[in-house]
Amino acid sequence: MLIKAFSLLLRSIVIFGLGVTIGGVTFEIGGNDNIAVGVAILVFTSGAVWAISSFNEPLKVLSVTASKISGYKNKQARKSDMQRLENEMFRLKELKDADIVTEEEYNLKIASLKKHYLEL
Image 1: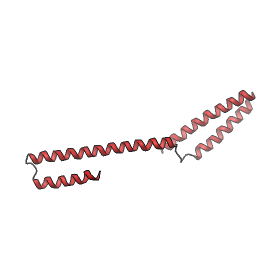
Image 2: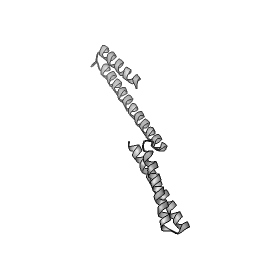
Image 3: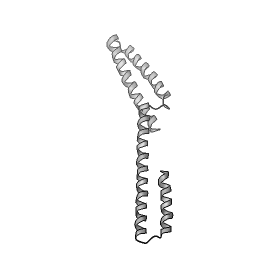
Image 4: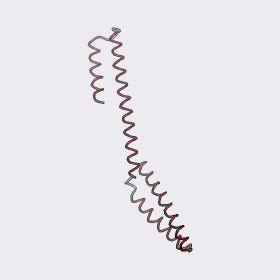
């Protein structure tokens, strides 16, 4: 939803700039305030209708950027989960080496951790 709102904002800025530019050019060419204002209002109105009707279609640049950011966050979360599981495996190995955990408990927990690790 944020991407759609930002797309609407960017479209509105473009339409405003376009309306001011076309209105200013019309005023310089024609020299009549009424014609320049009328052209600017026409551009603003048609642009507003276009921007509002395109609300559900976010700009491609914003969609691509959002998907890349989402992919990066997912990659970081996966990397963090893998690191946590690796640390847990090393901790279990140290516990087994110190004879705190039996061989059977160690094998059960390692098998469980390996299963989660491979699922990532």
